[in-house]
Structure formats: structure tokens, C-alpha cells
Amino acid sequence: MARTTGSDGEKTEAALREAAVSLMARHGYEAVSMRQLAAEVGVQAAALYRYFPTKEDLLFTLMREHMEGLIGAWEETRPLMAGPAERLEAFVGNHIRFHVARRHSTHVSNMELRSLSRENLTHILRLRTSYEKELRQILRDGVETGAFLVDDTGLTAMAIIQMVTGVIVWFRPDERLSVDEVTETYLSMTLRLVGAETKNIKNSREKRDVHAFDEFRAG
Amino acid sequence: MARTTGSDGEKTEAALREAAVSLMARHGYEAVSMRQLAAEVGVQAAALYRYFPTKEDLLFTLMREHMEGLIGAWEETRPLMAGPAERLEAFVGNHIRFHVARRHSTHVSNMELRSLSRENLTHILRLRTSYEKELRQILRDGVETGAFLVDDTGLTAMAIIQMVTGVIVWFRPDERLSVDEVTETYLSMTLRLVGAETKNIKNSREKRDVHAFDEFRAG
DNA sequence: TCAATAATAAAACAAACGTTCAATTAATTC
DNA sequence: GAATTAATTGAACGTTTGTTTTATTATTGA
Image (cartoon, rainbow over all chains, first blue to last red; front, side, top):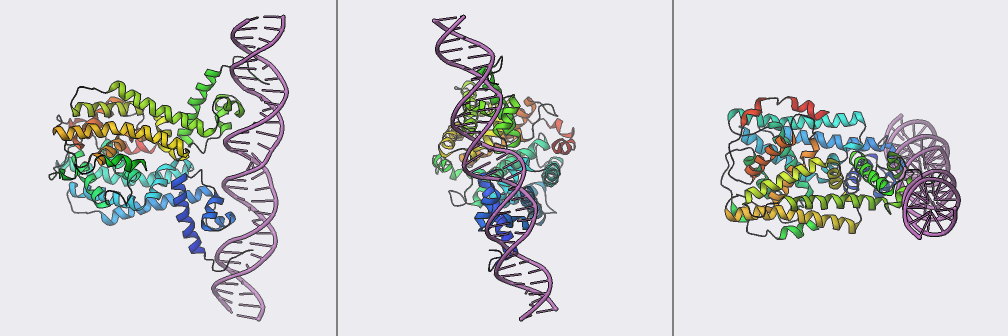
């Protein structure tokens, strides 16, 4: 056996990336073997080395493209002529939407940093820092104009990012709340967190099903 | 060679646990081998099986004791006769202090869930859920008494936990801020997040060194 | 002092790991 | 239709993996 009928490099590579993200998100980078990944795509392990020189390079590629995608999405979304509050809303909205839509690659990007070599790690951290800088700048502008009341922009930026990224830990698209509902709630939490003036909170949803939440998470 | 002079089962076990937490926090459960762990303690790999039947059992033990410790710490700390705001402060304070003091085991407990068997995973998740319930109850009480203004207690509880647990990702005890300063800042962020009345924010620290934060995180 | 027990080493196990290489076939180009 | 290139297989490499077994020595209690 050798080349199979209908084989196509581009399709194989795309399938490999998708399978790699999915497998690594569920079992972790170290726990996923090249043979396992190959089997998922219906190919022999040796074939992977046509597309990725090493296993770590595969991981790095996935993480880099995730980060570049996140930064790219923000660059397309961000309002340039707007007040801090509006820009903060845009940032949080973009962040949540992007991450919910890419739960698996977000998981990989957040969890597998320790499996990268020194250089590759530096590269990813640089991307991450440049992204986080955007948020810190928004917070600083908000403090300056008096729109926000913030104790410490560095800590607040980390707290917000941690909070909104955490959505993917429990969010399931087919459950209780839609992405828009979740985004809206997180938006109002964020605005209050930074001491911005907020519209009235609709307290109506509260009574609905507070107890259903436990079982919801257990699954 | 066989039993070595001065060997003591209790000490060996304690050393193994400590080394295991440290190694797994840094490199991940899957990436740490039994031989590597044994070498760290100065013992042969076979000796580990006197203390832990399998590698996974070792992981499970570490995670279970971490969670039991967290719940235990909260049970000793929590004020029983107090308003929601005070209870929330106690919860956040205990959470941050406990996690900062146990950064490594927190990392393991948060990252290595996927390496547990079905049963062991269920056990840990049960502990976690029971802990999170405490926070949700505080939030619910706060909403009921009007102390808090919360959109959705379930989401808010997750947001808070995500936010405060995230401290260990960047916090280094020998850096810019002390545990108490960090805790204080996170406390005021949490209170604003739930719409509680807060004292005046001291905006004084802000101007100090906002730009030092980037380099601080890159290392 | 001697028997019992606790703690370890040393060696071995099969299985799985990431990766390389040569051979082979499908698709493409001329 | 022949030559070239693209895509893949199958086998093999040396390591490393978690774990078991057996032998050996240190410590403890009678």
C-alpha cells in the first residue's frame, strides 16, 4: 500500500488540525499520541510528518493560529472612535464570542503552554501580552476620563480576562442560556467591576431556575 | 541493595507527595514519569508502589486532599451569623489565601481532571460542586435581602470563582504586591461585581507603575 | 539474640512512544 | 503514454512508559 485514491494533502492537513485540537482539548497534549491522532483521521502515523515536523510543532502551530485569530478578530471588531465603556463592551463581547466559538482551541491554548519549548513559549506569550495590553489600555483610558473607577489596572485586566475566559469551562451552547444571554450578563458584570455607570439590571431572570444549575454542571 | 539505612515510610511518602505536586504542577501529570518522581526523592521507581497502587491513584489522592483541605478551611473560616456581604468577603478571602498558599496543588487540581477515571472524576467534581454551592447560597441570600444586585446567581458564582482562582496564574509572592493587597483589591472588585455598596476606592495606587506590569508577566 | 516486618533495590515485562526510511501507488504534467 | 511529483504505507528504530516480581537489607519487638 502507498498513496490512496482520492488522497489530498490540503484536506488531510485540515482534518489533522481539527482532530488534533479536539483530541488535545479533551485528553491533553501529552496524552494524545501521534498514532491516535492518525487513526482519528484514518491515516498512518508516518503520514503526519509530511505536515508537521514534530509533535510539538503541531501544538505550536495550533496555538499560534489561535492567538493570531483572536487578535485578528479584535482588530476587526474594535471601535476606534468610542468611549472607554463602549470599547470595553466590544472587547468583552469579542472575547466571549471568539472563545465560545472555539472552545477546543482555547482549551489547548490555555492549558498546554508548558509543553512548548522556550522559543515557542516566548512567541505565544508575546502574542498574549499584546492582546492583554489592549484591555489594559482601555482600562487606563477609562480611569483617565473618569468613566471607570479602578484600583489597579493590571490586576483588573487579569481579573476580567480570567473571568470571561472562564466561560468556556462551563458553557454548553445547547443548554440553559444562549451566547448572547451569557455575553450580556458578563458584560454587565464587567462594567460594574470597573465601576462604570450601568443601566438597570433586569432582575427578572433570577427567580427562574437557580437550582437547575447544579445538575447542569455535574454532567 | 535493598532497604537503606535511615529509611522511613512516613517520610518517604510525604516527600513523594510534595515532589509529585511540584513536578505535576510544572510539567503536567502525563509528562511526569514514575521514574522521574522517584529520582526526585532519591528512590527507585518500584518503591512508589508501596505507597500508591497506581499513578492515577497518586493523582487522585493529591486532588482529593486538596479539595478536602479547601472545604475544611472554609468551614473553619466562615462566619455563621453575618450578612451576605461579610460572608462573601470571608469566602473570597479564604479562597485567595488558600490558593495562593497552595499554588502547585491548585494547579494540579484545576488542570488534571481529565486524567482521572470516571469514578475518581465524579468524586472530585462532587467536592467541587459542594464548595461552589456555598458561594451560590451567599449570592442568593444577598439577592433576597437586597444587599446584592445580581443578574444570575449561577453565572455570577462561576465568574467570581474563575476570577479569584485566576490569581495563582500570575501571582508571585515576592513581587509587586503582597497577598493582602491582592486580596483587598479582589475583594472590592467582587463586591462591585455583585452590586454591593462599597467603601470609597483608594485610587492612589493607580499611578504607581502601570507599565511595569508587562515585563512582570513576561518572566 | 532472633524472628518478624518494613522499606527498598534490581531486574524484567510487554506495551507504547515519537520518529525515520524505503518502497509504492495515485495524481499531475508534458 | 511516459515522466514527474504528491501522498501515503508498512516496517523498523531505540527509548521510555507503568507496573510486577523477587531478593535483600534495615529496623523493630519479643
